[in-house]
Length: 336
Length: 301
Image (cartoon, rainbow over all chains, first blue to last red; front, side, top):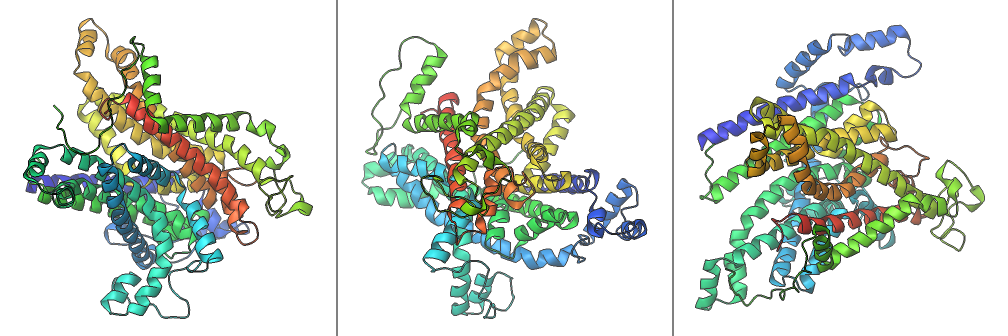
């Protein structure tokens, strides 16, 4: 067990170092010169040279990488050439907003996906199952940035029941920052009005993001339930006369929940990606939106920061998922 | 032995047609699943639209930065069946032409991804040892970061444009194929027919290319058919952000991005290309889902 955890951590470290190299070399080797772009079209040779020296771009690549890694280890993610701000504090400010959105999306995915999968399993191969299958495939086929626009058009523009963009009412003060997640902060400070406001802003983007997880969770729950329903202990329980509803909700679902948990863990990363475009459309001040503006201005330091942070978060969630799996299912032994 | 429960199960299907022709069997299985037939019909229709659609549309000249200011923001009518955009271009024509753009992008992306991923995966699985370790750690790195984010960084670094977008997406897409191929090779490597090939003096490369790769074809086809849709989504995402295909080339992501600013005056400009993209991706996913049932014995009921 201890060995397994250590092994996972070592592997994770390798992956993270590799990730830092990948982002670094993508940013530095591939042609577009960030300094030229930052300096603007009218900068003189001398000004460009000065900028190069200031950001250390005149040094050999390997030296630049070593320096970048050194800075990273000290928690310094570098300085944006375009924004002329440090990337670290920016990420710290924007990440809670993204995390809030992603967690809300995963919550929606579970709350809607589990019942959908349950219905599909109970009515296996009949109409509800077929509908659930089409629904699931449909949900992973919808471009989420387009769905975001459709929701804006319907809910905000035509029906005017939800705000168009943003994260909180501009005329009101958001709840005091504890976690940086408005809904959580509002609940912690028992400010239910702010909670309601934050929720109204969050619901549409979170729903757009939830579809991939929702669909996959529904399919996983269906498959696992069908597996469990075919086992001996369920047959015995049925023979003893336990009603079907109790059987499914109390016995089968419990055993099917393990894979669902893994799916939620896996979909953390997927949902985080989706948030890049959805945040942009809803003007949600998260790291996705930050990454898009950095990509458009070819500002690589923030882009690298976002990539690293995302990779780190995903690796962390994977480890936690594995750990839960280990704790929840004593049959699993990690030996190798 | 299957356990009888009171849960509804499908009635036993009619027996498959006589004869052991694999194609006939595949077609038979395809017919058993109406959803994949729908998917197949959708895909055929989309391919048709992509291949000859651009020659048939009412306003082929709108594929460029053509303007028709007198007709700008026209709601759908007899001339412009799905309305016009802010410079008067026919949304229907551009949407159809964009089908070709998206199909080309996703097919090229998958082709490059396979050309990189399959050989690497085969080498990894066949040789094992440190080669395997190195290649797999590299795929780990790529698979940790969301494809869209990495493709975004690559596309930003390479510079925008269709070719660069394709390269960027392919560069983050190959690890999936490497992983798939490796897994398949690992399971094939120990099989008797491979052992026989080796015993008869077949070299390593001969074994890989002539005996192993042809046998993993069905797994690759299933993955590719599911991936076409996702590659279209990523490419459109890049186009939407502005680091992929550039205006005025008709591309769904670019069109949605342009139409987004016109939401209040002309909803059709962003909704129509999205419907086309949704239909396309759904068609490929339905077909891929059906193909998986047919070709992958593990999921066969």
